[in-house]
Length: 168
Image (cartoon, rainbow, N blue to C red):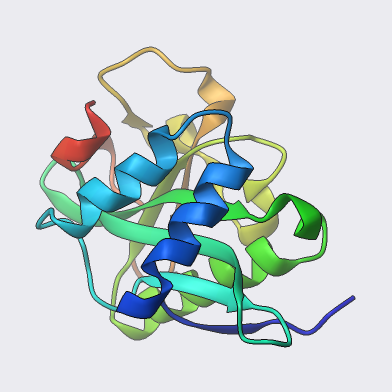
């Protein structure tokens, strides 16, 4: 398994990040979302991470942006993706782990993700409903997950409010 170098996204990476999302997802919605989030106040410098191949080309991507659980600041992990030829190589996991570590280093406490329930538990995410966290839209219970980055700060209960570009 390759050893991935992870780093914060730079402006030079924007086309590569868009390409990763366009290649990884069925529609351009995730790529368009990242573009919209870059212009939104929810964007936090240093929480958009890439994993690179041996040539320095971004192949995996993870983004954390500001959201809230009721009025408590939290982060939203979305989207994260990998180039299809790097699927199951650890490139996306490396980007996610780097993003979570960067958030922890910045003093952030909570992260939520709406995603595939078989993928995110490896990073410590558990069902958000077990902590009294929900959404205003109906989603499968196992799809909304939450994580505390600091054991001294248990997850708050409440409703997740995403940044406007998410449309929910």
